[in-house]
Length: 371
Image 1: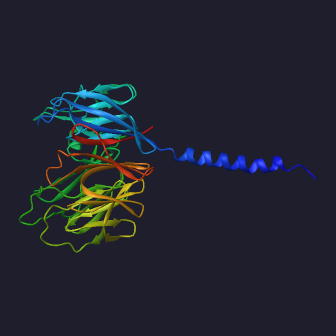
Image 2 (image 1 turned 90 degrees about the vertical axis):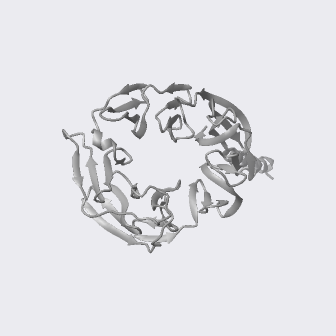
């Protein structure tokens, strides 16, 4: 009889190899960027950007990346972008390199957008003192690009800054500016039709704003009246009515068009509606897709959070960001201004628990970076 002992060992080794490979794949590591105040002072000076690293659901490291003067640099209050898993860009166009810990803020102004390695910065100091700068992430230098034109910059720009749209409240009209590099000048055109927005007598929002959302560089979603959504296709030079949503006449706030973190299109009026552009349909939304399998309920009070089909928490929350297996949420213990949250909670799929971060005052989430 042949010796079968060697053959018996092979399945055991195979099982051990597959098990180690499986658990190796389950290893979950990510870093959360957080901006915090160093004290309880209202001016919040100084401020610090922290990098908090997690692995398999546990916090394994915390590092201060940048401490800065709140009077000259503001990342967490005004707004920010996280680009290329490396650069933090504030709404005032301060640019911080996480890897090299360099801060670039020589030309500060409104963040206009980015195109590949270029970040566009719009400076408007009043009157004729209007300028455009670009910052090259590769060369680390500022330049004055030849495009777009000054009128272009006052509009709502498409994702790659190829087109800009402006809304004129005096006659409820729209003008599109098409930036073409092979032309000597930008192409401008007023669109057909009247585009209006209305709000109830107790509405506190800006009544001069029109809900608009670029779907890509060629298509814009907007309305001609509350609930009447239209698709403007500049590549095909067409204006198409998508749908009529029977919203209330007396709205408490100006309607808003936005995309959630999962890329779904929402129209918020008397309710929050999911918009299916391709099939020209709408449904009332109950949750916002937070990406990576997470969802948050649409609520003005406590927000319910889900991972897959499982409820994982419910509390007063505002800003939230997810990455694979992790969800970070700013929270308050009671109803008050969300400009100064009480703290940040992080849920992870490894031990399926919430962790309250030990961070300083009024922490704000910047975003996740992959390790």
